[in-house]
Length: 227
Image 1: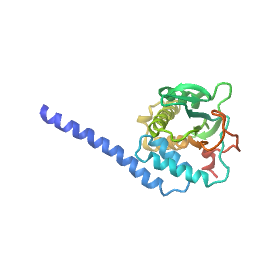
Image 2: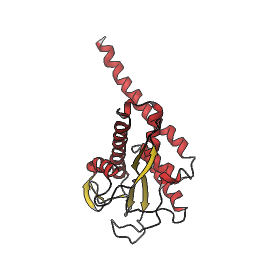
Image 3: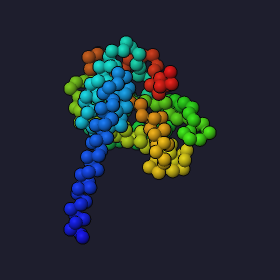
Image 4: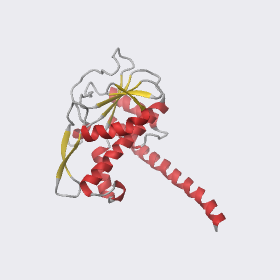
């Protein structure tokens, strides 16, 4: 019996890993039909380690560049750019990549130091109550090319984990339950409220000082869903 368990366990692990790959592929097949740049950012946020990461980012920039000057770097957003393989600028402060998770969560929960958190009112899913959640986005800014895909994926993974921690915080605050213990419909509702928090900007061909991207008209993808 013990020997059989030793044989079955690795097979089970392999099946679970394959299922994760299948989810990423399934989402990619749907996403690549979209002509909206933010759908690709949504895919990257959900699957930061996907083999389709580069394809999604490339399509994001293609669609982003085809729309004339309607995206921004808002002062309420968290600005993140790479210095080297281990360090980055998070709102012009040097941080380590592995610290991004906690900084991302704290940014969504409390806003930026000296700048009040930008909030929006929402109906708490499957209740009659209202509450406010962060409107915060993460501006991922590329100043130099080529940029290591592994470095960028590591950054996005930590940010995505921080966003997931914020969903965990909302689940505890709204339902007094862990996110994993919520119903499928509540999970999907929480996901939808938080799945478009990444924005990418390529300034590699511009003479722009690191940490100070050009200001543009404010735009919020979360609000655009309701238009």
